[in-house]
Image (cartoon, rainbow, N blue to C red; front, side):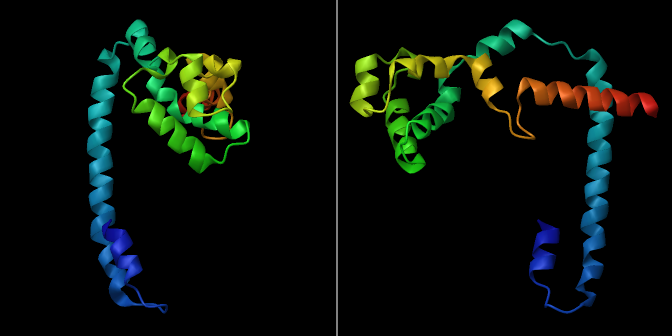
Length: 152
């Protein structure tokens, strides 16, 4: 934020104010170094509870954006899809527990295939953009980092 404030306040020509960026840069480096020390000490003792992770990842409310994207795929503008899903989420019921009638009352664009949205594994595979958490992108990044770490 300090760097942003310094750069935002600069006039369009060179200014000596850029001398003020060093303190923020050095503070950032110190913070990252400290975090890396903590992480390197923590990682060897890390245990992963796959069952717990999967149970938490299967919360249907986490797929509200996917439900809105489903509606967008059916021709509903995103702004409207967002509002529709927001009302459904605010109903107090879990999204995957809503009946077909409740979905259709919210929008005629919901079809019988709406239940497929709540499969978390399919939802992850739908995220194919670069940088997304799709299984393929995650595997690619793991392989990349293994290679980088082995060469050093």
